[in-house]
Length: 434
Image 1 (cartoon, rainbow, N blue to C red):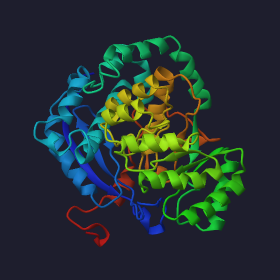
Image 2: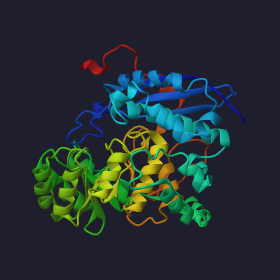
Image 3: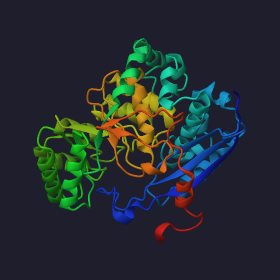
């Protein structure tokens, strides 16, 4: 069925999560989980594509404005004209001669591109009557390669090598599809590890998730060492010494500070330290990784693009690759990053805190396991138990496993009541913050 995109609308959606301090960390002390919500309207009755990117509240209006500037490149196009040369379309959208100066391929513009690209994939999957993970898994290796813009990564991953990785796993995809449909993808929880909780509530959260089958827990660190030690002690008392504990500094430390802090916190036997320093500091991460081994370094949540991921992987600066479904330019670029991670045998463990990110990354991780990296060793997806009630395709996590969705699309369509309730009025100041 040929369909044409007749309009693109974008809404400013914000949830006042900072009111109860849920989701705070060492550097983002008042996050209001928010998203520009894109709708692609088509000439086919009842067929729309939905997509988001993710922000922390104030400034969400900037992404909305950026998405508006991209509208002319999408409206009037047929879906087939986009997917027939998906890599070319993606490159054009990311590299408009004037807009790219605001990046290129990073920051506000690139995150805004992600919302549009994610909406196109949602529309594509719905048109085919498939979930996104199934749509990707049913594509041939060449079709996947044709979705990827290989600019600036061919020195490490040329198209032929990417094709070979996908072809190697092609004959056994069906058995992994069946496996994931039966048992799902492994998850860890960050819901017991946020800052701002009192001891009683933190212990209760640990017990709740232990009862739910979780064996991997992540906590925030970096605001105050003594407080980090106290909270790590509480969590270890509750989960014991045999289960995995991960730590996340959210970029707050300088390089040498990260090393000294983690040598002290190593007594709690963390599996990884996440974002120990600036997300742009490739060599700093490499220095940290070498100094604190066998503790791994996890990063990627705020890494801008596939070129940066290439360098992190080349230099041994990440032992866990944390893709974010909205930080880079959507599905197409994430395919490249997952293939890069496979080349360097680094497990992909997605970041999924925020609005709808858990919904997104389950599709990406499922495809990664099915077609790129057929091993779940050290692979685990973040699960943050908030805001899932606002989505039509409700997330299912059972016994610490993501249960794969079966509704066509990318699982990001929000309920109309939620959109109406949490849309922020244009032109107003969010919570009087400047």
